[in-house]
Image (cartoon, rainbow, N blue to C red; front, side, top):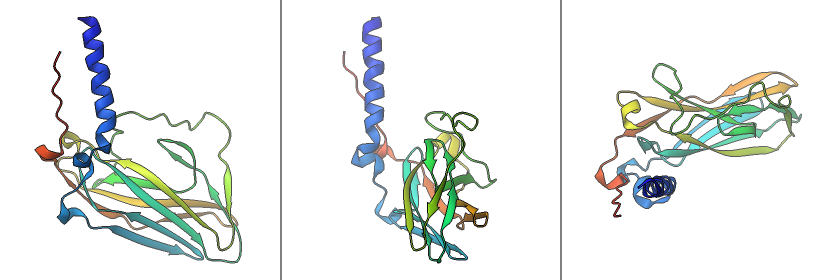
Length: 190
């Protein structure tokens, strides 16, 4: 019995891990395929945030394409961002609800090593250079998202020659409850 229980749990974990790759769990209704894009400019720096769609099912993972362009004649240096999935990102994002609170990390609680490891590194962005990063975010499950409105915005920080905090305007995300066709159904037979 114990061996069968472990097998069932391993099977559940494997199926859940593969679930976001199935067409049913990531395909939004045709009316929800609107792309979202916002641009912010401060001096010679242009920060962009692009989403392939603006409507997400609760529990769905999304991708944000963040781009920073240096249209000036001098190099700037970017401060490293601390993101839930690790260090080494110089472009970031902020996903918040209507109160400005970040949702609890779901389905895992990531480790962010603010005091562990070497000092954050700066990265040079030369004149005319473009830096792009695709970042993942997670919409909370229905029981945590119900009644909330979510926004996302791109972030970047420079340290030299002038310290700047760059941010795009927030993009509103439409969050909907998945129907039966978008939910993972498992039928175990032992």
